[in-house]
Figure 1 (cartoon, rainbow, N blue to C red):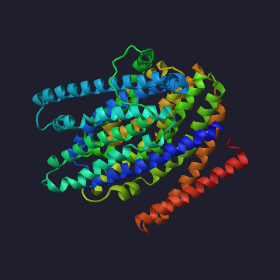
Figure 2: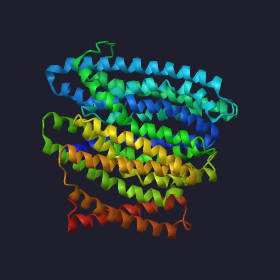
Figure 3: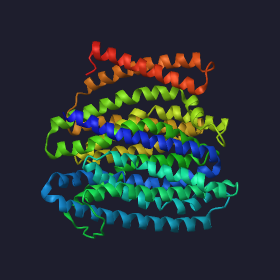
Figure 4: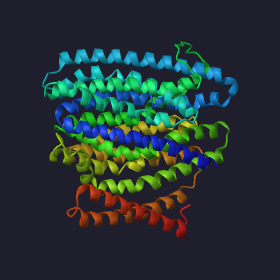
Amino acid sequence: MSSKKIIRAVSIVSLGTIIARVFGLAREITTANFFGTISIYDAFILAFMIPNFFRGLIAEGALNTAFIPVFTEYTLDENRNAEGKEIFNICFTISLITTISLFLLILCVSFISLRVISETSRWYKVFILVRFTFPYLIFISLSALNTGVLNAYKDFFVPSLSPVVLDFFWIAALFLILPFLPDIPERQIFVLCVGVLLGGLGQFLFTLIPVIKKGYDVRFNLNFSHPAVRRMRVLLAPMVIGVAVTPINLLVDNTLANTLYEGAVSGLWYSTRIFQLPLGVFAISISTAVLPWFSENISSKNHQEFVRHLVFATRMLVFLLLPFTFGMIILKKELVTFLFARGMFTTKSVGLVASPLAFYSLGLLGYGGASVWGRAFYACKDTTTPVKVGICSIFVNFIMDIIFMRFMGHNGIALSTSIVGITNFLLLVYLFNRKHLYIDLRKETVFFLKVFFAATLMGLVLYICRSILSSRVSLPLFLFSCIIVSVLVYILATGVLIKRWGLK
C-alpha cells in the first residue's frame, strides 16, 4: 500500500516538475534567441550560479535535509504542532539572517575585486553582475524552507510548481523590458537580473501562501537554543559538505570552463538544462517524495519497510532514466538544434551544446541514484559517510576536469562530471549496505542488467531510425517519430522481461 502512496506522491511531484521543466526549457529557448553563447551571457551564468551555489548548501540542500527529518517528528504528533510552528519561525529567522549576511559579504568582495582585476578580465563582468543576482538567494532560501514544511505534510505539487514563477518573470522581463534598451548585450543582460530578482520574490510568496493556509505565520524568533534547532545544528554541520558536492563541482566546472573560450560556460549551461529535464522530472521527484517515508520508517524503526521503499525507488529510477541516457546520446545534435537553433544561437552554438550533452547523459543514472541514496543516509541520521564520499569526489572532479579539459575542452568537464556522479552512486550503495541495512545487491544488479538490455535494444532501434529518417523528413517529424518508436520498443522489451524473465 505504501508503494502505491509513493507512486502517487512521485506522480504529483513529477506532474508539477514536468510543468516547471517545460517552462524552464521555454525560458532557456527564449534566452538563447537573445543571447546565444556570447561572452556576456557566460558572465551572467556564473553570476547567477554563485547564489545558486549557496542555495544548494543552505536552502534545498543542508537546511531541508536537516529540517525535514526533525520537523516531521513534530507534524506526526498532534500535541507538538504549536512547537512545530515555533521551529518554522526560528528557521525562517536563521535563514534570513544568514542570507542577508552573505549578500553583504559578496558585495564587499565584489567592490574589492573590481579594484584589483582588469576590465578585460573574464571575471570583471561576473563581479559586476553578481551584485544584482545574489539577492535571489535571500528569497529562494525562504522559499526552500516553505517547501520543507509542505513536503513534511506530503504536499508536493505546489513546491514542484514554484520554479515556474521564476521562469515567468525571466521571460516577461525579456519581452517587456528588452525592447526599450539599446541593442548592446552588455546593457541588455541586466534585464535578466531584474527577472531573477522578481522571480525569487515571487517564488517565496507562491510557496508561503499554502504554508499560511496550514496555520503557520511568519514571525521573527530568536530562540536558537530550542532543542530541535540544536538537533538540526548537529545534523547540519556535516551535511553542508555532504550536500555541497553537486554545487561545488558545478561551480568548479564552470569556473574552469570560463578559462577556455567564449561559449564554453554557455555550452555547459544549455546542455545541463536538457540533461536535468529527466533528472528533475524523475530523480528529484522520486527522492523528494520518498524522504518523508524514509524519515517515518526510521522514526518508527520499521527497517524492513525502509529497505523496501529504498529498493522500490531505486528500481523506478533505473527503469525511467536508462532510456533517456541512450536517447540523449544518440539524438544530441537534433535535440539541441530543435530547441535552441534560432536568433543569436548559431550553428557553432549547436556544436558547443550538443557534445557535452552526450557526456553529461552518461552520468544521468549516477546522479539520480545518489539523490535517493543520499537521502537514505540522512534519514538514518548518518551524515558522516556522505561527507567522506563528497570530499573525495570534489577533489577527483577537480583533478579530472584539469586533465580532460586539456584534451577535450569543455566536453572533458562534462565527462568528468558524469564519472564523478556514477562513482558517488556506487560508493553510497556499497557503504550503505555495509554500515546500515542489508540489501541484496546481486538481485538488484540482475534487475539493472535486464533493464539495460531493454534500453540498449531501444537505442539500437533509435540509431537505425536516425540513419533512415534524419535526411528524409522535417526535424520535428523526425524527433516525434523517433520518440514514438523508442517508447514502443522499450515498453515491449521490458514487457517481455517482466513476463518471461521476472523483472520483479
